[in-house]
Amino acid sequence: MNTTTPLIEARGINKHFGAVTALEDVNLSLMPGEVLGVVGDNGAGKSTLMKILAGLYPPSRGQLIVQGQPVHFSSPKDARDRGIEMVYQDLALAGNLRIDENIFLGREHTRRLLGVVPIVHHQANMKQAQEHLERLRIQVKSVGQRVEELSGGQRQAVAIARATAFDAKVIIMDEPTAALAIKEVRKVLDLIKDLRTHGIGVILISHRLDDIFYVCDRVMALFHGRNFAEAPLGRTDRNEVIGWIMGNRSQTASAQELDLN
Image (cartoon, rainbow, N blue to C red; front, top):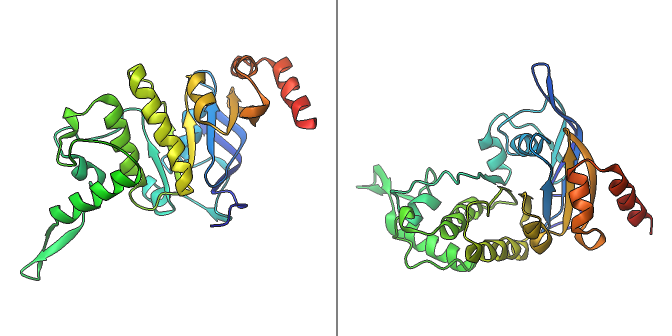
């Protein structure tokens, strides 16, 4: 894997909804094995940008680059085919299905009955689901459990496992710990950290600065649909990032001074 080429880049992204400008000349880059925190107040453009990266929205103007190659996504499937997966806040899991069925939903392993009729190969799905969970160090009683029986943290882990089951290179997560009990938050954040060891890049949208400073390598802030500031986590602090979220330009000047030192 080329560790000097970004997994994904957004260059000069603009998005208009009628007369409303949601994004204006936004840039973003993500390196292999990097966790990038994206922060901003409500309406800053975070979710719109992520939906463009995930193929849900086309940009009005600008360019997406995946591993050095310009791309155009017409649908989320196009993004998934290039290794970009998004875990939405509502997780989109089927509670009445087993863990393995959720992981492989729509992409099940099949075998042919009498050499002709394709049917789902449940044993293969369960075996590979178990191996995948072990690789990610996700602990559940059994891959045969129904998702509705799991805790919030376990459901989030299953959603992450599903996103990474098919050679994902980039995982976009929208508020992954927002609905979790405190004791489950650390487990999910540690799972996100572990994704780095597989060379997966993670973009984390979160209002929880504790999460950002625990798991991320770098943080970028959007304000009114534009890039406002960004810095490695070791070269900023909570007060400065809070200032960025609020549009405090004196804090932005401090970040620029840090970059010059």
